Length: 354
Image 1 (tube, rainbow, N blue to C red):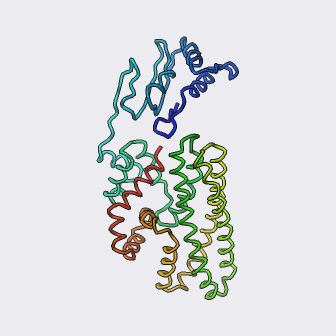
Image 2 (spheres, rainbow, N blue to C red):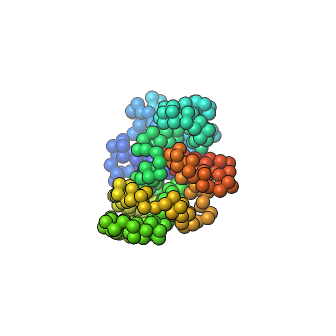
């Protein structure tokens, strides 16, 4: 049983006892109303059994005490990050956190040694952001290994595909986690809006004027942007409620909207990458590509520029990274190396850790 000891709202032992009593065969109508009576019924039902109770991620002694079986022959295994949690009669085993090199090696089992060797400094930053905790390393390592390809387009698709499950995974009462996930959704939507607004303003008019035989494709791009804009507005308007009260119906509503947005966005990006971008490569000069980038940059909020740049650098190919570093002002490059890269790694580790 996950007791949510590291979240914003640990599980109430009285509620956990209801789950235990149901699992032990007690009819729902017979479950006592008070926590004390539930604990007594739980001990009675486990008295004649040999039971091992797993209490995972406990917050404190007061939380686990009512959940402990009370007779010989039964046992409980408690996991916690809080050293002060030692119930009477318990034997304590402390599992040491891997040191940094062990944590990097553990991360490499999922990402591959080549990924670690390509950027050992970033690997060290990532394991530090994960607290060198094995579960967090496994989650982030497996996520990196499963990505369908590196580069902005592939990584943006992956991030969009992950958002519905992140929202569905929110727990009632855990507003701290909800704030983190909602922030990730808003960050993605703001970047999408800025990118599409710059294309609407600069790219489509030029392509329409220079590629007479592709007017239908350009029109489809603009139509898809309008549909995506409506979906973005819909999702944005729904985010405040699960952020304040992450109950399952509210989270499921936003997750379904994000899934629809992702489906439309994937179809749009397929056509954009296969049809439109090759046309743009033929029709636009280097100076015009740079102007398009400057327009996109101008549409981002200035307070988020370092975060945006760090996110782009985290998913860019080596060639894209070289381009960004060449174009970025020297202060921006310095800030990214000093704090932006590390801050983004920490944020992403928090978002995807269990």
